[in-house]
Each structure stands twice: as structure tokens, then as C-alpha cells.
Image 1 (spheres, rainbow, N blue to C red):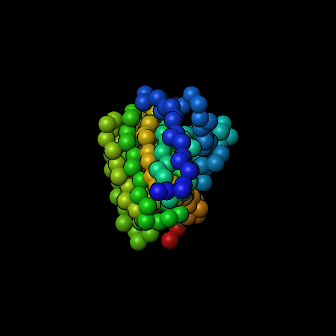
Image 2 (image 1 turned 180 degrees about the vertical axis):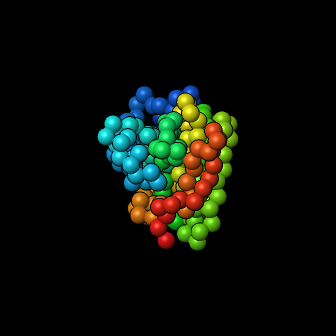
Image 3 (image 1 turned 90 degrees about the horizontal axis):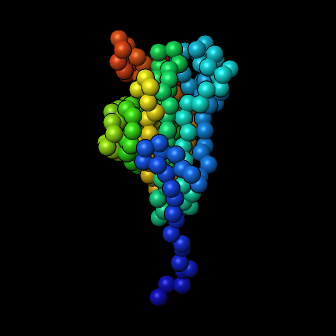
Length: 193
């Protein structure tokens, strides 16, 4: 017989159309917090003056411990910095071997992934498609639509944690830019070895 007190179920709300929650407050990333992440620094600085909202996400408040599943929604807005599409900051998990799943609810874009050894992968997001991010891979969502938000549902182990610092200091090896009216994956001119 277990002596552990029962834990209550967690009930959350979010729209499958907008990704928004009526009861949770979003965590927002504006251009002022993202300017250094883009290759075209001058264009990023101009948008930082306007402090454009690049993306927001809703953490549904599940305990950050082993055995739990953290989840929420992420909304990456349409836009570009120079010719580079709006994106999330991107992160590794603090517990490097933990994976994450993203399910596209609306919009289109790419999931960029990279491991510490230098393997780079990307997968397309379209509505109804899930992208599994393996453990050991940093990942970021990139909105390639000119006029529609990229809305995803995500879930990962509660104890995984987030390491944003590595990406802030090094960046990703590849970036996604518009070339001839379509997304193209190219080498990041700012990538630090």
C-alpha cells in the first residue's frame, strides 16, 4: 500500500485554432530579446526599436519533476528579419538526453534541430503533422508563412529543463531564409564554433 498522497489532475484550456489559453498567462519573446539571434543585425535592431512580438508560449503549469509531462502551446508569428524568418530562440534540454514532441495545429514552418556533435536536421511543419525531436538535439520552430501564425502543441519530460544559453552564445549552424519566394536552409554566417 502506497503512503504517497494522491496528486490532483491538472485541467488546462487552450484553443486548437489560436493556441491561446483563457486561463494561463503567456511567456512572450519580443524582438528586443531576440535581436542577437538573427544574421542581419541591422534589420534586427530596427525591429527591436518597435519591439515586435516574435513568439509566445503557454506553459500549462505541470510540476517540473521526473515522471511528469510538461506541455503547452507555442505561437510563432509571421515576419522576417531581413530575409530570415521569425523563429523561436531555440534550446537544448538541461537533461540532454530528453526528447520532445511538437504537433502542428495551424500554419506552416520548419523545426530546426542540431546535436552537439554537429548533426543538423530539419522537418517541415504542416497542420496535423507531429515532429519528434530526439534527445540531445537543440530545436527551434521557424514560421515560413507570410501571413499566418505557426501554432504548435508540445510535450516533454517534466524534469528536462531548458538550456537557452548555449544557443544564445553559439547559435545554430543553419538558418532559414527566403530565396526566390520560398524557404531555404543555408549556413549561418554568425555561427560560432
